[in-house]
Length: 433
Image (cartoon, rainbow, N blue to C red; front, side, top):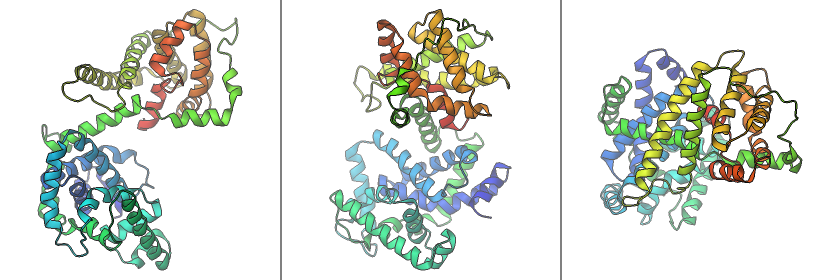
């Protein structure tokens, strides 16, 4: 079976299928973690966490995703979170001890030690085609003929992509002040693969991953890292919504959209909440958005120990994560097929009412605008996409219709460019829900 057939088999309850994926990809994940961390024991925990994350994400991943690339990117993200918590001096000392053993590898050069923690960043900077060829050649040890068959390209084309990819990695490292030859890069990437592929490490990793998936590994480092990563992803989706979507709508739509009149007419029906369960949920979501706005005031993330804002930051983070899960779950129970678009519009109107202090006329106008947008397309998800794609124009038009006091609240919560408005549809679409 290929990788995605193994994933499908695992989702149907065949644990051996997932074990096969772990044993196949563990050496690649573990060696990448060692390169970036310089700590063999911590790298085992990181590798376990990556597979726990994969177990939770796999059912929603597109079948077009190249798993090796996904594992390398996720390893990079988990390592980045770990490094934020590690003492830099300790990190360097651990790296020095690990690199001492690697320096015996064929093709090792004086600057290779400096290149080790940057190698994965250089690999992930390649184009998808070049990355796939380098990974297949160096990490999976495939022949050029096998690479060509795998990627449906000629053998010569595969060889050229590998050569071009390694040269780009060399230049990437050189721009960061690290000078190594092309021949050293495969040595760096493959230095730990052989030792990580033996029966010991993958077997131990699978035991830990299996325990975590079955709920028997509470308190382990690997599970803790996975939970921390998944929470961080949820938080980033909420409090760091991409400005590219807003910018794209503005560039495509031009200034004409900004003239959209939120006061759509005196005859707009009064806004009324049709389901009593929506009002507390909308109020709760308004509180989440306001706490998220507070967190956005810390672009560097969690304040260091001793900072007077650290306790408030941690409290807000816990609140956002806990309430996001609760509100999302309870709202899902409220939404009814056939009325889901109307009910979601009511929910978002309540949030805006609570956050901005909208009067009755403003609530009616906001609901009408939201409902018109989310009603586009044949399915509810199509409506969500339509609402999300128009969030910039909606937000800026709403801002222009507010009083001075309301506009100040808007800016504090959603930003002057309206980037934080309509966070909930973006969260749903981003999570695949």
